[in-house]
Amino acid sequence: MEATWLTFTWPTMAGAVLFSLVTYFLLRALYNIYFHPLKGIPGPKTWSATRLPYIWALLRGSFVHDIQKLHRRYGPVLRIAPDEVAFAEPSAWNDILQSYPGKPAFLKDPTWWTTQRIHTEGLLTAIDPERHARMRKALTPGFTTRALRSQEPVIQRYVNLLVERLSNMVDSSSPAEKDTGGVAAAEVDISPWFNFVTFDIFGDLSFGESFHCLENSNYHPWVAILFHTPAMATKVAAARFYPWLESVLFKLIPRSLRKMQRDHWGQVVERVERRMNYEVEREDIMSPILRENTKNQMSVDDINGSFMALVIAGSETTATALTGMMNYLIQNPQYLKQVTDEVRGLGQDEQQITLDSLRELKWLNAVLTEALRLCTPIPWILPRRVPESGGVVAGVTLAGQTLVSIQAYTMQRDSNHWHRAEEFLPERWLPDANKPESEFYTDNKEAFQPFSVGPRVCLGIHLAWAEMRLITGKLLRAFDFEAVEGKRLEWESLKTFMLVERKPVVVRMRHASR
Image (cartoon, rainbow, N blue to C red; front, side):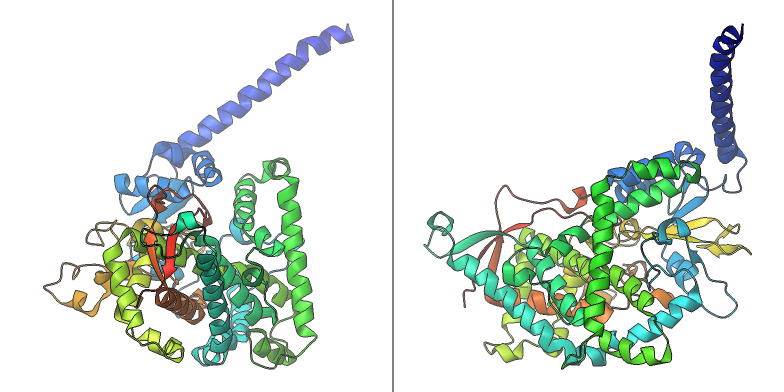
């Protein structure tokens, strides 16, 4: 009798549970679409009903492109989840990120920024504004223009090593690679070389020791691990959207990725400890932090947590911008010639290629700025939460705790803000573009904030510009570049997992013709 009762009730109970779950999610979706406070914000009903389309786009790496398509259809203010609104409107930069008296801060969303159990909070992950401000105050002296002057010899040394390594590749090229005139040439994927040099520079300036990527013409094992970190963070964030499923979803993350994350943390701790136990002869990024620690501005855990993220933020982003720049230059020979002639116009003396001299070159700066517009290393600003008291973003009044994000990729390719928005046109950044007769006069430069704004504006902005100018300048001075037929990369096809994925950018290189 008991067995019969169990046979009868278990299927019934399972069916009832399933029916209840389906009913709950259906009713919840209907509420989100028709009764939620964000019901009036334009957007597709499927994205407004549930987080699932959002999460699917994240995991596929198609998020920024999917959002761009939706913005084009629905406008600059877009509902992309039941409780989240995306903005492709210039005023959103200040409304969300800027801070001033009387305006409550839009705090970072813990879904993205809460650290893993094996980590500690650092500068980039700190949610509390006061904690962030304390750490930033301690870190800032290592990133000022004054600090950069003392760091220039280090940057010069690694950029010179980059030129040397690439020169060796040209010299050792096979006979089949020689051009029609018998001149030595080499086909090179330039993308990893930008990573080699930026990681080596940041390693030396942060820890007093290089990663030796350039020396070995290969990625340091730790650097190889770093490429998986954004994908890992994306998957963790996706799991956190459903806390009741988080433990199950987290188990779907491959053990290899979780091990890489632990190894990454271990490498940071080890290098920080070594750096703290010896003195360097010249100032580096860590020097002022260690001095200021006598005032307890940053604990060892603060330093570890900060540099775990800064290693990526200070290297991979710059390498992405340089890769995008080179990809567009070889596809636009007229601009490649313009900026090459400008750099070589500084003269034959190596001593003339300095950060000060390159800072004054109009075409070099224009080319790099246009590359940042089209190949922005941070394609979207991760969500912030509207303060409990509510807030206004781009003229839209939002309830407290609403999630808001800024879609930089969309905004920087929007024809409402840019003339011939999808084209690589460096002249839009030349001084003449500010004249009323210029076709670029109406470009909305406020839409372009590649280093963010407000209290969390990029700490390494001066270092990033120094690296981009010096690396580009010395490469164009030393080599002639051209595209390789049949090996064109469409930047717009690249996936994004917080950061932009990397694919080969193949160039043909020769020693510079004078």
